[in-house]
Length: 172
Image (cartoon, rainbow, N blue to C red; front, side, top):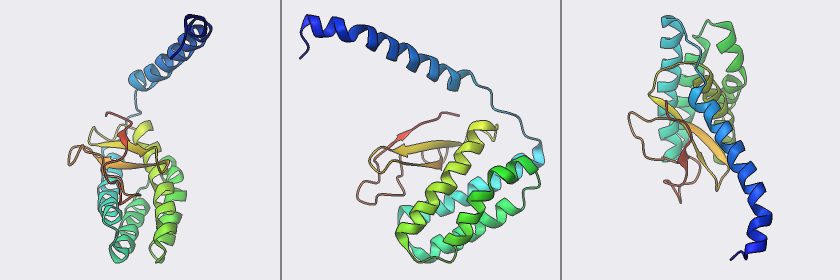
């Protein structure tokens, strides 16, 4: 427990940190996501829907399902003709192609994390609708994209021993 002197000493720092967190939070609340034309929005939605299958394959790890779903997400990414979106998802596509051939669960989970970072970047930057959000687990220090309309509960794909560990980081 803090005595009065320690509290007074820490109080200015606490105030500064609280103020900084409020400023950062306001950027997320008031930052408008860039619009997409209907065709690109549909293509990105197809990628995110395919990613739901991949997420499910990781949630209850099944290597055959992971490989099949990874290939499907990669194909959906290749169908996107928007140069900026394609560029942002290039690394994700490359990781998906590796995942489609790998039988190493640990390596696949690391690759899925990279894929998830790319998809999270897209949904934070562009208005793809309010269906998908970014979730993260502080224990494994990883994030993922999840269809919140389908299931708003945390479904941690990285740690089967703690499937509900984590939090929703965005609210679109």
